[in-house]
Structures are given as C-alpha cells and as structure tokens.
Image 1 (spheres, rainbow, N blue to C red):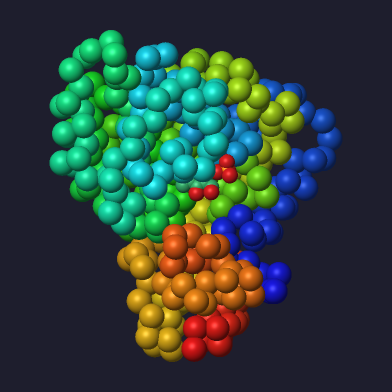
Image 2 (cartoon, protein in one colour):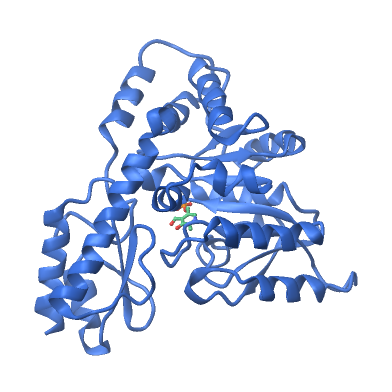
Length: 341
Ligand SMILES: Cc1ncc(COP(=O)(O)O)c(C=O)c1O
C-alpha cells in the first residue's frame, strides 16, 4: 500500500513553514501555559483575522476544541443540535456527554448540511418542559463531514433561526480553511461577521503537526472556555509549540494556500474519476474530500489495497492534503481503475 494517504487530511506531514516556526520556538526558554510571546502574537493575529472581539485559545485537538467550545454555551440540562453526520455526534466517543454533560440532538442533513426548515421545526418544538433537554446551541460543521460547504447565505439563515430562539452558535471549523478557500472569503466572513459565538479552528488537517484552537467571539465566554480548557486537560504547559504552528498558518494567510491546494487536488481527483472511470462522486466536491461510490464486491479490495477510508456501505472517502501531488492523485485513480474494472 502506498505510504501517501487519502484516508484523512491528517495522514500528511507538516508544512515546512510550520516546522520552521516550531524550530524557532524551541530556541531558548519561554513562559508556560500561554504566557509566552508567541501565544500573545497569535492572539493579536487572531483579532486581525476574526475581529477585535476574538480571543484564541490553543488546544491539542479538534475533539477538545468542539467539546470545550460547545460546553461553554450550555447549562447542565441543555442539548446541542447538530447534523446527523457531525463529528460531535459520531466521532468523539462519549466526550460531549462525559466531559460536557450535554445531550446531542441530530437532524437529517442531506449532503452534510443542516436545513433551515429542520432547525426551525426542532427549535419550535421545544415546549420548555423540564422533561426534555433544552436545545440551547447549534453546531455547524464548515466544511462539512461530507466535503460540502455552507454558503454565507445558508449560514446567515441558520444563525438567524438560532438567534431568534436565543440559541447560541458554534462552528466546527476543523476544515474552515477549506471552506473559506473554496468560497474566496475571509475566515471572519463565515464566523464572526455572521454572529457566531465560538469556533473550533482546525490546523492539524491543514499543515500543522498537531494542535487546533477555540476561537471565542463573545468576550463573555473567554473565562468559561479558559477554565474548561484546563479542566478538560487541553491546556498545554508548553503552549508556545501549539501557538507557533497556528501563528505560522495565520501569517500571510498560509492557511489559504494550503487549503486551496488540498481543494484543487480534490477537484483534480473528482475530474479524473469522471473522465477516466465514469464515476460521479457521491457528494458535491466543494472542499478537499471526495466520496467515491464503490460496488459492494470491490469494497474489500479497494480499502485493503488503496489508501482510502471505508465510509458508507458502498462509498469510500479520499481526502486531499496540503501536500497531495498530482502523482498521488494519478496513482489513486489508476488503482481504482484496476480494482473497479
Ligand atoms: C469535522 C471534524 N471535526 C473535528 C475533528 C477533530 O478531530 P480530532 O479530535 O481527531 O482532532 C475532525 C477530525 O476528523 C473532523 O473531521
């Protein structure tokens, strides 16, 4: 099996600028727990990127960012509303319940996106009864778990529905960079500009070695998020090494270059699937993930022999990275052509 992988965008290594920033951060000594100059510089940069009310709190991973960010929005009797495909609902074990003590309510989400009508109906159905978890927050994944992207208009409509009911909004932005790169927007245009309360900002999947962040957009949430970060074991003592990576990605908008490259590789893969194999991806390719329909009888061979992830019963996932090459894509398509024939 090829050592170059498409199972996830965390199969890739780290961008040279990130590694250089880590190397520089390792020189000398620095204050711990975020009191260092790199974390201060990151916070300043985050305010330039997300607006003056933003505070960025680096964490170790995306599950931690999601659980901390959403927990800060909820009381002990509350629920977060998510898409049925949400990482929060399916891929974080019981962390949301165990750590955040929250109920997770899922809604159908064709192609990964929550719909205004479904969200409106769910929120309107809440009768205030103590017998039910109160839907107090909604979490939107951008780009989605199915590689699709909410437009700013779709986000605006969903945020409006939530706000009308006093419901807070979290964005799972493990791949926010891919969405913004695709739409040609700023990161703020998909978050702070729309009235989002808190964002999980991914870096691991976009060229970092490890580390993500919670970006708090409502200043009243800074203290709860900071306290939760420590209480949930996500506070790094040598935080400068997480901060250095995030800062490298936010400097000169490196995040857009890396995410744009991954998106373009996904487009190239989707194009070759169509032209060489006559296969149409299972979902619109709007970010860096391509979902490839595979007949049942070929599924075993495909997932054993090719670096893709089994997804649904007859679909595999191929995610492109910041360093996916044309040769990587061609090799994958050649392998698929051999096994699907
Ligand atoms: C949509 C989404 N959110 C969050 C995460 C973060 O997960 P992790 O805790 O593995 O960093 C992932 C990673 O797969 C993801 O795809």
